[in-house]
Length: 252
Image (cartoon, rainbow, N blue to C red; front, side, top):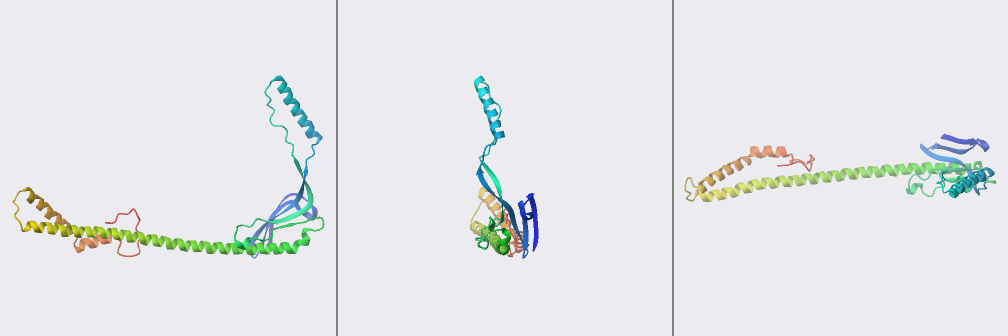
């Protein structure tokens, strides 16, 4: 069992101190504790010096009031309502439970002494409490590790589902674009087929528009060749399930 502590205050019975903080290591766990001296609270009895200080302050304040002067002597003397007297009885206390997990609740953490019962008489129970606290802290750490692992696994699954959803949306958008190309080309072919079998006067407005429409169909046909489509698919990067497509990226 490893013990470390910090000492504050003047030495008292059995080399104990009025304020003593430290930790003890049990089963790999550091358990913090404090050792303090219990005090009794009694009503403060004003001393002659305090009574004299208060009387001087009141005299100055009354004199300033009679003269009509501003009284700038500050606040009245601070005289406590209570005094705290050491009892010579020590209190051994474990730190509050580190968290509200079930493993650390309901454990005794305070051991006090009085005139008939000393801390050394409770040593076995103190060691038992230290051991129980160490076990509780270990269980808390185990539960926290399981929780963090579960959260990490859920985060990975959620991010993967979000990635696949983004990928599916981009594929759908890409497909819609391809369908628009194909549908536009098909409709334009039907449109021009009507004029191929009709009479259109050369150098007329309809003839100029038909010429432009045929050029448009040629450009669309170029976008639909196997080579052009392959290059467009490769640029989009949507043909496998691995990539993460950012939501801001434009896919054509």
